Image 1 (cartoon, rainbow, N blue to C red):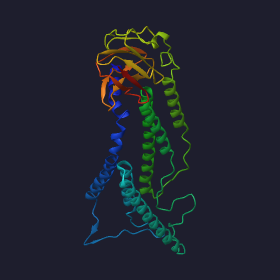
Image 2 (cartoon, rainbow, N blue to C red; image 1 turned 90 degrees about the vertical axis):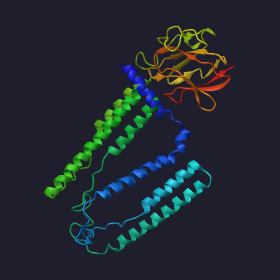
Image 3 (tube, rainbow, N blue to C red; image 1 turned 180 degrees about the vertical axis):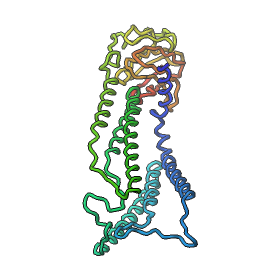
Image 4 (cartoon, one colour; image 1 turned 45 degrees about the vertical axis):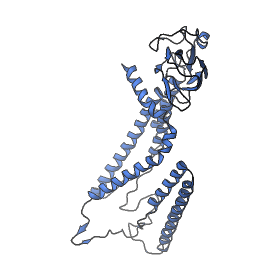
Amino acid sequence: MLEELWHDLIGFLERFIVPNWGLLIALLPVFLLIPVLGYLAWLFYRFSNAGPTRRGKRRVPPATPAGIHMPGPSFAPVLGAIGLFFTVFGMVAGGPWLLVGLLVLAMTLLYWGREALREYDSVRRSEGQAVVVGGLPAPIGRAPEGVHIPPPSFRPILVALSLTMLVAGMIVGGWALFLGLIAMAITLLGWLWDSRKEYKAVQEADTTGHLEMGDAPAWPKATFAVLAILVAVTVLFTSGILPNSSDVAAPAASTAPGAGGATGGGTASAAPSGAPLPAADAVLTAQNVTFDPTALTAPAAKPFTIAFDNRDTLPHDMVIKDAAGATVFHGELVTGPKVVVYDVPAIPAGSYTFVCSVHSNMTGTLTTK
């Protein structure tokens, strides 16, 4: 039952782990447009549900606390996003679009820099003015009275580490993917816990008038230790150190081709890896996340068989693609150590590429003649 669920999960994830990168790059501008439209929709929702902004017939202007400088509104971030969009679009579309994107981005960055210089000059001119109690400058190491500044946090770097583990797990598969998900969940829950504590502190300050900022955060030794243990367990399960893992040896006969022209009995015929291989037209071994050999030969225009010997504990399969990238055969996903025989239908003479749908680095060439 669990093995079937795991195979279904791998079959679903292989669509995202080994995608069509050319198509994804071509759709990159669309992917960038989605968060922009989502942000605009969120702004529209917030403004439509905002509270009353008028008292009587006139709008009450916001009052900045004395001694605190508030920068004015700016279109520079929006223009910068537009310039970056055109630059990325130019990298994908090529031609004059790339030059247009670079020009737009350069103009928006120059505009943003000029705005920042004006803001800086405005602050310098006001340095000679008197500063009221509670205003700026504040004592070193403390926030101004009535201003809440979030304390420093290790959570962003922890989430970045766990995200790296998750992406590596999506490439390797198996236990690495599962442990990467655990690492991501641990770090995100920790960040949510920190945010909850900060929110409660701000709520208490609303009633007591005092906001305790706390000391500098301690190094998250426990979280680092948990992530290190997860990395060690992942390496242990995927390196073949443990028994019945991808390091299990097989007789030398398993690397030699079987009797030519004999049929293997279909993909349902399976045997433990290391046992004498069933007769087949060709033999393909998966070990240490690599194919051996990387070049196979088979008869053209008639069905043939391939004995697939998966010596890894990771799931592997064999997908044969033509020169245009179309799939002509997709073999059963096999979790080793295990041997199956693939019945490949007749394909025309030519050169084909075979790949593991779970691990895109496992590739080879099949020649039919």
